[in-house]
Length: 313
Ligand SMILES: O=CC(=O)O
Image (cartoon, rainbow, N blue to C red; front, side):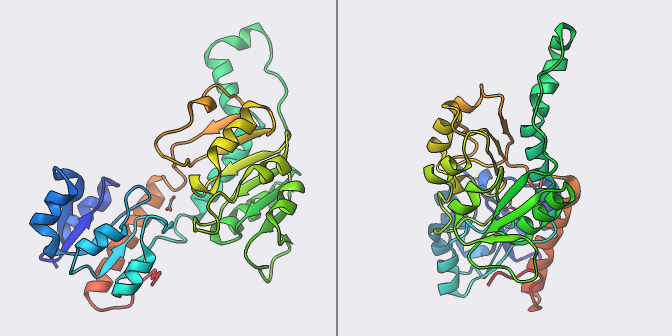
């Protein structure tokens, strides 16, 4: 397969780059002076694109690659891929579901604990020597809280399972009621936000879920409520969130994702009730390797005319 051109859109896990390089003719887009220059030289050679949460395959890139047959995303989220354009051209798409579910769900719980138990502030308290001057102030308990989950897919369900183990009451909002769960279904996100203490965003980013967390939802969660986002930044109307936090209208937030990554609103930096992470939901060695293996296996299957392992279309 070493004459098959595979285009990586941006730097990713080194192991993935190495495994692709062993098998295919790998083009690394970021090593060219510009996308236009790369396309002028090599557009005709590219039969596969490997993108991720930063740079996927938009309509323009897809339209510039006449021999493109597959987009294999090194991510579960598909929001950086023009699904319609791929559909129109019969271009296959794969992603990396399941293998990252545990890590992302673990991190959601980690963020809840970090915000409620003020773990980062406590760490700073010890490191700066403040402990010598007295005890840290009291924090907030997590066990037994009511947790609302937006999106009860694979990741939302894994978060629900973990929250249950903490003795939490779990309810959820999604497009339709999921059969076979004991969690309370809310057909309206405002009802969910009004009735929970911790709201976790775990749905995929689509036109319908863009800014699903708006002023009304944040106000419904209220000054003691906690918002956690391990989905995508654009799920939340970020300026609205920032003003709710700076004005004390929301209790706290744990955010792994932002609207314009890697730019994060500076107003959040001084807030102790906010925990900020650099989009690391699935970033463990174990999971990154499993995701990379899936990308490679999907590409191999595609070029050997075998069934794809994790097809989206
Ligand atoms: O955000 C992570 C992913 O979509 O895999």
